[in-house]
Image 1 (cartoon, rainbow, N blue to C red):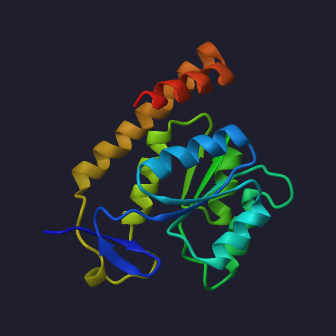
Image 2: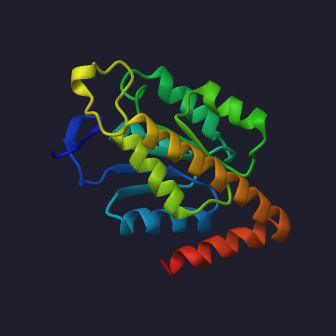
Length: 193
C-alpha cells in the first residue's frame, strides 16, 4: 500500500517533500535549519522575522511553518494568531521553537494555535521528524475515509514515551554543560550525520 500524506492541496504520495516557511531571527539557527531541511529535499523559504514569514505564507501557502517565538516586530505568537484568523492559512501546521520551555510558554503557544512546540536547543533531526509528523497528520475536519490508517496505538504510545525520555535527557544534558555549549555540541554532532 502506497502511503499518502496531507498537504494544503490534498493527499500526495509518500516520499515527496514539502514546502516549509521558517521565521528565525538568529542567523546561525536559521542557516542550520534551512540547510538541514533543504538537504532532506524540502523547499525551504527562510525569513528573519514574523512579518516576512507572514508575507511568504500568504504569497504561497506552505505545508508547514516553523516560527521562533521571540522575534523583533511580529512575534511567533502574533504570526500564529494572524494565520489562524485567515481562512486561507487557518489549517497550516505550525511548529513553535523557542528557548523558553517553561510551562506557561508552552501553554501560551498551544493556546495561540500552534500544532507543535520545540525547545531550543534542538536536534535538526527532531525538527525534521516533527515536520514529517505534521505533514502526515490529517487536517482538522477531515473525514475518516480521507485519512489513511498509518500508525496503531501501541506504536503511537511507544513514540510518545521515546519523545518524553528524549526531552528529559536533553534537559539533564543541558543543565550539566550549559545551554550554549549544549547547542554547539548538538549542531556539531548533527553536521556529521
